[in-house]
Length: 181
Ligand SMILES: [Zn+2]
Ligand SMILES: [Zn+2]
Image (cartoon, rainbow, N blue to C red; front, top):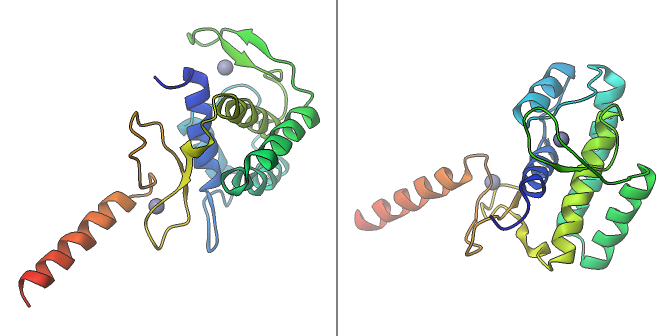
């Protein structure tokens, strides 16, 4: 394990949230889609199932995406702003059979606030360990997804959206075309 378990989970969830907003696709079009995301990424605590909550989550995504593009100083400004705006106060807690981990806002804080703070706390870990290069973009030329490389040898190239398979298929076709020419 490279980072604390809650840090790794928060980074993966943040990348997944960023990737729900593509240039020509909306992965969280309605409250039902947000419900699915909530469950898929193991969120718990307050969840209102309202359009207002969905809009707050939508508004968070471009701020998180910037973290994947920005230099360290800008990342730090964003992390500090997210923590400050959310009045983060780190506390170790235990719930739902999980071991002790950090929560920096109460479990009844709005979902978008908790998403912002979890991401900010996790990115703060990366900054402190000088590991921001773990936040990368998918190598597939037609993909603009972000990814978190948690591999030991920093070998991750593709996002979770099936780009690894797509790239393997293209490479296979290219090889086959070459051998038939
Ligand atoms: Zn928790
Ligand atoms: Zn991709």
